[in-house]
Length: 177
Image: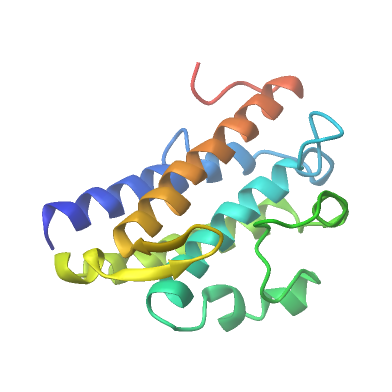
């Protein structure tokens, strides 16, 4: 594994599994808190976490490798009654706000499963593979590296920040302060 692949996997591990990451941000929440929306125009905490987990799962498995995501392998769309293919990107607000998520421990398990599944895949990507172009909606053609960097890491941290703010509004401790 090269240094680029190590950077990507270590960064995803930090985002998902770190002490200030997504799993730490939701694992102590009640079902009611998971569905908390800080403002009428924002998505629920659970939506933000699910969206990042689904996006990472979809980018690595489907967009880059044309394989079935963990989401479909485990049949979570049916088990949870959530969209089969949509993962929240460009989802109408009313639809996003209507989604209901399972208990935090169940959502956490999916996040851990995604992290465990995508890590070895990314470790195995060659530098040449990461520089290949791929279509990524809504951005158009991007390198596979950009797909991971933009849609998983940068975008994932944006949502983590939203979750952290919502936690503080619920009176929970911030993960970063």
